[in-house]
Structure formats: structure tokens, C-alpha cells
Amino acid sequence: MHDRRTADFVRSRGARTFTNLRISTKIVTVALVISSIFAAIAVVGLVSIRNLAAQQEHQYRTNVLALSHMTEARSAVGSQLEAVVSHILSEPGFYRNQYENAIKETDQRLDTNLVALHQVNLARSEMQALESFESLLEMWRTARDTALAASRSGDRQKATTLLLVSSESVARSVKTRADAVLGQLVESVATAARQSMASSKATERFMLLLLVAGALIAVTLALLAARTMSRPLREAVDVLTAVGQGDFRRRLAVRGNDEFGQMGQALNETLVALRDAFAGLRHEAYHDSLTGLANRALIRQILTDALSRPTTSVALLVIDLDGFKEINDTYGHKVGDLLLITVADRLRNGLRSTDDTAARLGGDEFAVLLDGFEDPAGAYEVADRLLASIGEPFTVSGIELRPQASIGIALRREHTDIDDLIHDADVAMYAAKAAGKNNVVRFEHMTAAL
Image (cartoon, rainbow, N blue to C red; front, top):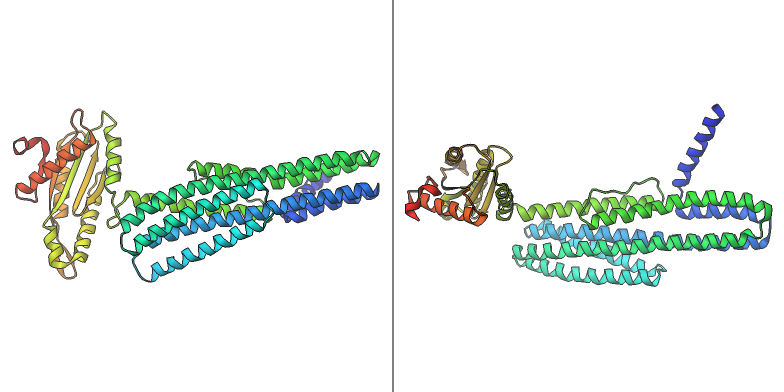
């Protein structure tokens, strides 16, 4: 029993040591062991094995270099996406200059790795895939420069729109092209393995009895080498395929410190950067940048979902600040922005639960969606509470402000769609202003005013 445990420990430790060897070292190790066996048999066998080892080393070095440079190029694209988004969202000054430098640096990294990929002895089909990737990259740079030009000119909305459209298309195309290159590299490894098997069979005829022992050792080492090299490639294809479908949760298992382990680590970091970049873009697309509340697009989406449930009671409150323009004109936009942020916080704190949603529709207009309640009077209670909360005084820069608001309430009616509900709440809000402001009006109670 002790001898068996000792043998298992030695095999386990040997497998871990082999996994951490460099790819070229693994190949040379296999070649040397096989060569030492066949050298005692015939010069022909030794020459065949050396040729086989050289062919394998060439194939693996080519594929590993291509994978390394392609992974670095993907990482540079992800970093550049973040830098461009940050550039557009930042104001002119130090940070924008830093993002400008980051964009130039990632461009240099891309160009360096693309030049290196051209220097690798890629197959024709792999070179065509690389050229297609470069064409897409030039399209991205053109769209990026257009977005940056709009950003520098102050047209941030146009820059953000251009960036969202371009980045989504290019990111999807980059992943598709990267998957194609990786798939071709995996096929190259399989072709090299088939060539190795053919060479082994040709040599087998010269080995006689000793060839049986040599074949067993060669197969064992080849299986171990194939497992440590082909498995990471297959997993990389699976992970990148999932990314192409929008799933950023998959990661490569990093088992060693060889080139494949380094590639896996770099790819995992790239996936994290892409996930964070897309999450940031999505948040910016659906939230108000000043207050952090949901914007008009997100509140419409949530409202559509609520109206799709026929048994759910839904109420929409449209809130417009009274006299906001006068505050802006009197005290400046900085005070006006602080007022909007304060009102947003009070609306957020006044929600009943996470089922309710507060949003900024634009300017000084807000909305609150109440999703689910037993008695319509509950909507009045929430509106009155929010009106009182908004009206509490607060001081900014030594100025005491007492904001007021007009609130319109629209309850879900039979066959009510989203635009009808928003229209009803708007009409009720304007009726509240007409009734003297700082007031709450429900749509059903104002038919005479329509």
C-alpha cells in the first residue's frame, strides 16, 4: 500500500511539473525521449523523429505566437473602448488628456501586435482572417475618430450615439473574427497531430520488437502533451463563442505557467474589461448622468413590463418643479443642478419598495412608477408624501430654497397602453399647475378641464 501511494504521488507531481513547462520544452522533451529510444535501432528512425519534432515545434510556436499577439490585440481594443467612453464622458482638461494618451497608446499596441502577426508564418486562410480583422479595425477607428471629434466639439450626445453603435458592432465583429482565427489554429494543431501519427506509422516498420516499447512511451508522452495544449484551445473557443452570444461569465481555467496559461490569464482579463465596458455603456444608456435615476428610455421599458401583467395595479406620477427656471436664472445652473440632485434623492427615498421606480424625464421633470397597490388611494398617499418631501427647505451656498412641485397621477385603466398612461399623467400634471401649482391632481378627476 505504501509503495502504491508513493507511485501515485510521483505520477501526480510529474504531471504538474510537465504542465508548467514551456510549450517548446514539452515538445523537445517528447522528441528527445523518442529519439533516444530509436537512435539505438537505426539512423533512419532517428532522422524521422528529429524531422517530426522540428515540424511539431514549428507548428506550435507559430500557433502560440499568433494566439499571444491576437489576445494582446483584443486586450488593446477593450482598453481603447474604455478610454474612448471615458473621453466622451469627461470634461476638457487633465483627465481628457490622459484618455487621449491612452487611446494613442492602445493604437500603438494594436499596430505592434498586428505587425508581429504579419511576421508569423500564418497559413493563407489565417492571414485572410487577419486581414478581415484589420479591415474591421479601420472601420472602428474611423467611427471612433468621428465620435471623438464630436466629443471635442462639445456634442456629447452625438459622440455617445456614434460610439454605442460603433462599439457594439465592432466588438461583436472582433470576437467573431478572433473565434475564426482560433478555430483555424486549433485545426492546425489537429493537422500537425495527424502528420505526427503518419510519420510514427512509417517509422514503426523499422522498429521491430523494441519499437513496441518505444511506441508505448511515445503515445504516453504525446497524449500528455496533447492534453496540456489542445484542451486550453478548445476551452478558449468555447469561452469566446459564449462571449459572442453576450455571455461574459465564462472564464478559462488557468492550469499552468506556460504560454497557454499566460494566454488564458490575458484573455480572462480582457473579458473582465469588456464586461465592465459594456456594463458601463448600458448603465449610461439607461440612467440620467446628473441624478443617477432611471432615464426616459428605462422608465418606458419598466412601464411596458408592468402593463404586460394584466392583474397588476399601476400608477404613474409625473412631477414637474415649479419655478425652476427662476432659480436657475437667479442663482445659476450650479444651484439648479444641486436642486435637481436633492429632489432626485428625496424621490428615491420616498419609494415604497424596490418594485417602484423613480426617473428623470428631462429638465426639471421627473416620474415615479408605482407597481402594485391594493387601493387607488395609496397613489394619493405616495404623491402627497413626495410633495411634502420635495417642499422641505434646504440650504446651498448660504441660500435657503423651498422647492415646490406639481404632480399629476394617472392610474391604469382598461386597455391602457404606455403612451396613454404617460399622456394622462402629463395632462393631470399641467392641470395641477393650472390649479395653483404645488398641488396633486388625478386624471380621472379632471374631465372638465380636458
